[in-house]
Image (cartoon, rainbow, N blue to C red; front, side, top):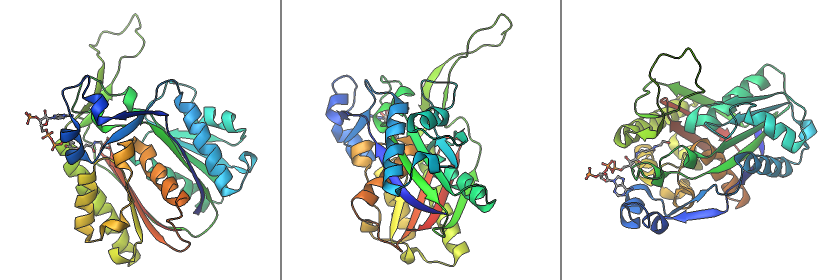
Length: 315
Ligand code: UT7
């Protein structure tokens, strides 16, 4: 399969580090050097499904195909206002498609996992065009009183249309259960029979553990793929990495021994938008004309689980 179109949509509200310091014990002087983040887009009066639908329509338009040409929709999402129906079903209705659809929750690695699901459908000969939409609102998972976590995230949606072709050279997925390092829990509806203790907690994170995992997993996934494909890091034109922290990106860059200009970033403007991060970056690079036909792209992401994934793609 190959990627034939991309799209993205961001909430209009921009929250700068200085705005955060008006109600949190934090500052741009702390946030920027430690994360590379200057600002993030945060949902206010929008609904996540509307951002997702808009990103999907832009990707279809960029691909030059119609919603009725789609054979499958895969949506990566951790949380949104609906428990059910799935976000992919809402997107299907919003764009006027009629194909089957599926939601996956693979945290920040959702785009790579979605590519892998799509790849399996292509290999089984079931589909010709698949829409992947990653839509996330982590700003609704964090406590806005917790400076350790809320400063890191932003909301948004990124989408890609994949079609028959030879673009995807390899995908590597990993998972290593470690559920106490990055999690959020919430209580469900009460019943007369619940006797266990339950409570809700906003997104909790052991930042340094996540940092170490991220660098190791992402570097390892990319190295594994390069070795398996008999390629060197030099042969990759663009490394599109999950935009969680510029220091994580720089550590992976140093491990691979590659120059900075191969690592486009948007973490400074968007913060960490979970699984939407990679496809938003891909769309921005695509629309800027940075990606030339035949360029080799390495995508890589990591997140809660822990899970991680990487893909090598010829554009
Ligand atoms: O998609 C995956 C999602 N998560 C990540 O990628 C996160 C990965 N981890 C990280 O990016 C970094 O670990 C952080 C940016 C979260 C933290 O950076 P750090 O250099 O590891 O800082 P730290 O956790 O060691 O905290 C240093 C200090 C602490 O104060 P004390 O205990 O030394 O007095 C924190 O309380 O910084 C304090 N701190 C803050 N101060 C001002 C933590 N957050 C803030 C803040 N503003 N926002």
